[in-house]
Image (cartoon, rainbow, N blue to C red; front, side):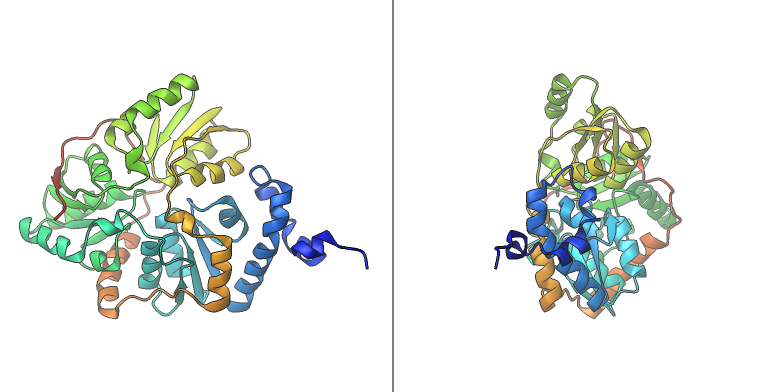
Length: 362
């Protein structure tokens, strides 16, 4: 019998038939020889989704083979939160980090929520606890607490309303208006708080938390990128320090940055955010050249095709939330979801923010 290299590698005619329509989505990033190695896993994942009535929620920071080839619902944390609440699937696999899986479970308690790696955490979520929030509320009585979704269920349960980078300005202004105050507590990202403060007349109390990916970018990085790439358009995420936004041409959430590239089609662009975001947006906009400064999120990169397959095959790792905490957290997340859609994701002004009151860690 002749040796069949494709069959030996798992890249059989059956796998080819199930996956070849997907390869054009990623061929600009993944060479053919590598595709033939991962295609069997992609085929098996997609088969299992159908068998088990499962969907995969893929965050914008997932690698292209996950984002484009097995992700059913793709986007930023706000988009994923909304869709988690609406999906008819019985099983949700969170291709993202742990707080996102908790949010899915909070909004869809009757569903099974799986995360491929329990080590897929978040520096922002780990920076603050429910006890910290209770102390903040004691220190600032009557001031509404707006909590970024990059937090644990325990923290959300102590919150008046949640927000994402897409709607942080809208949510803060809504919370202040409802409370009849000119002050909000926006936690735990100090840079998002400063950038929101630049967009409103509110006084903002925040926490000394930061995203370990975005806090590393500096204004000098942006100036060096411009020097090496004359005419480049710079898009920055509002988790970056205000001085980075001040150097950018545009600042907004991952959804806002993606929409900017799609709508404006800049000749040359750089996204000041996590690496894989640039890969995914580049694949959707082949006429745009991308400069790629690379800050990887080590937590997001714990989510792999092999891990997703293992979760679907075995039911590991199921994410649960204490029902009492979940009920309180659900109210905060639902208040955010129930706000009228602002339309296009918020565009942050690329300027330095006003001073905020920053509360140090314990």
